[in-house]
Image (cartoon, rainbow, N blue to C red; front, side, top):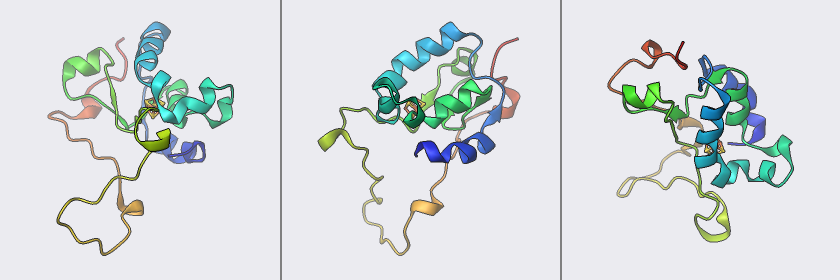
Length: 132
Ligand code: SF4
């Protein structure tokens, strides 16, 4: 994921702001984005190279990469960002590719076939992105 993916991420995002107010949003981002490799350039003063998912959220859409496993998590906007990579992870702090499953042969490059799957016990469309 790079800042150039913004258009695609915006298209696939759910309608509705992810947070009910700015305090809720800043609190969530302090816990996730403030230590994520994807937003490190923005923390260093280069906002244009920051995380495109944050930009999607600022446009009143909820990225599909932000998942909730329970209704309570959805109500409290307690998302799990599947693109999160701790900037202290791994050698050099660079995100590493997702490894192939053990015992599987790799016949085709996986990159373009990888996508976001939302395995939840409820229909995400039934849950408002924000509370009224
Ligand atoms: S990938 Fe997720 S956790 Fe990381 S900066 Fe973007 S929105 Fe935040």
